Length: 256
Image 1 (cartoon, rainbow, N blue to C red):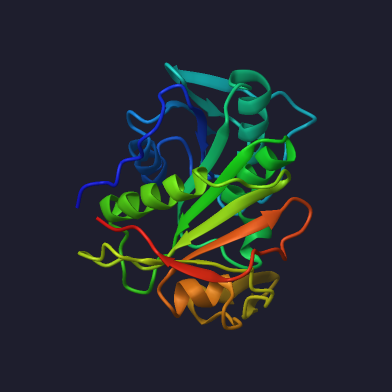
Image 2 (image 1 turned 90 degrees about the vertical axis):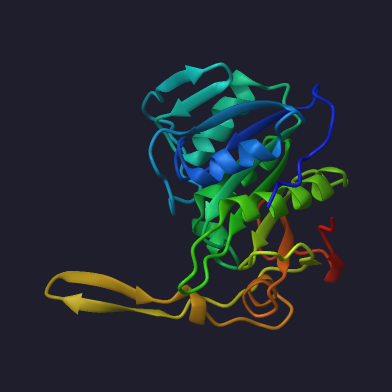
């Protein structure tokens, strides 16, 4: 399946980042969404930083390695990447896009996610931003070509809309099957239920045991929309709180 390519002015400047590292397939897929549509600068972690949340580095130097024209890896966190990108490398950028994360970032995940933290940091700094993730269902592998097709369509839609200052978008793609070109999009709130988990004790070690697939959820929230309804869940999150969402609505998008 060919990507749904974004179309736009090549004068549009965008920062791309993630929490999986500068060579992650999700970041390469995100780059492909913007080919010939914008001026891209990649500022991504040098090493995987999944689950690190909104940690920032303030008491030690942060090494930045220039890998090529408009491509940098940062020996720091995703939030560090946003700060350095928007304060030093490309402060003229209009948008920061973080992802595409292999795994959902829904509900309470937004507190732990480095992907979401990068977008949140950009919103704190006054920039428009989007975090985007791909849910991985049981016994399912990501087809990055299909993910890229739907990601590009959703990004195009969101970047054409206004968003209030101090808000950002959190996008979660459901399990995507080959040949599905019409995936409904639902604007919804974050689920507030905690994950269902426990710890297995082995002497002095506590080992996390839990399953993202069986997590509790309320109907109509982002977890239920993505997991149960198989729709693209989009939430508008306010800086300083996670329990924000514009009224639920649904559109069919994208279409060939």
